[in-house]
Amino acid sequence: MAAPHPRIVTAEPDDEGLRGHVGYNMKRAFHMIQLDVNATLAPFGLRMVTFSALVVVMENPGLRQSQLAEILAIERPNLVVILDELEQAGFLTRDRAPDDRRAYALHVTAQGLAVAEEARLAVAAHDRRMTAGLSDAELELVITALRRIERNGREGRTSG
Amino acid sequence: MAAPHPRIVTAEPDDEGLRGHVGYNMKRAFHMIQLDVNATLAPFGLRMVTFSALVVVMENPGLRQSQLAEILAIERPNLVVILDELEQAGFLTRDRAPDDRRAYALHVTAQGLAVAEEARLAVAAHDRRMTAGLSDAELELVITALRRIERNGREGRTSG
DNA sequence: TATTGTTATACTCTATAACTATA
DNA sequence: TATAGTTATAGAGTATAACAATA
Image 1 (cartoon, each protein chain N blue to C red):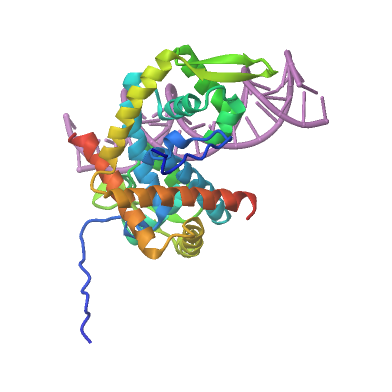
Image 2 (cartoon, chains in turn purple, green, cyan, orange; image 1 turned 180 degrees about the vertical axis):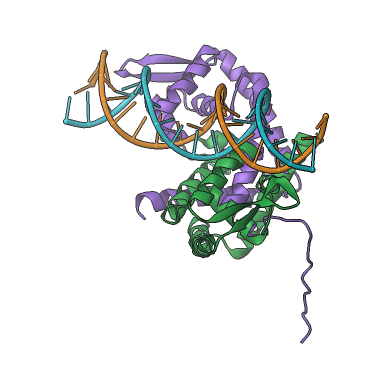
């Protein structure tokens, strides 16, 4: 019988055998996103991770460092330098918690609030650039899928 | 007028303000994927990037290092240690190209082929674990979207 | 004893400049 | 001169152990 789908032979070497793997494609996509978002945030004196921390503290005033680390899924030691950076830029304050003098209550300053609001607009524009060509429904599905993948991974680590 | 969708106030602090951003969710998802795939590949003496390199060389025998670096989107200096690792494990060979004695022609060994085939099964199982709960159509859309995002980022860097 | 934030440290991944040997 | 592979190095991101202050 004749082959119904004759294979097109390409001269160019490629990564065909990896294209079906989620992780491989996600690594490449995330690398591009990280380059673009950091370039987007640099004018504000922010990086992806400092931006994320700033937004979370903004929406959760008085948050403790350990809570922030938990929310952002980063280790406590690594958060220290992130907050140093934000504090030295004048974007947030570490205030001793009155009820527990081991802990710091985190608050975004007026300057930090202003910068964060502008940075959010820039990041939203970055998101639109990076996801150009995807419909709203597709974008929503992608985000839902990413959150599902993260959850699958986290559950696999603890109970699997 | 009464609010049609009364907001449920949660006591728990969270990252609500970041959940709409693709990059933030992708970073978290990819972190989980990377942990899982590296744990999956460790028994084979492979990492995510050495596995990728092995598969590409397998499907493109005689490939040059610079071509492989181009395909995998990694810098030539970083590929050197990756190939050192694969060569020392006995999974591939670097043969001097007869027509250009500056270059190496890469070939996967019989041992490398056997390991790669088993590793591919393990990685496919890892993919299914990580994407559990997504339909085939959703998974395909996610991969297409990831490739689109990478392309958007790459085009933004060169011509934008 | 346990917890909060911190320091020190190490390992991975990525990026750039400069070298060598060929072309 | 230009290119292929290499070396050296620096910068992020992430992980663990151990410490001081406080609970």
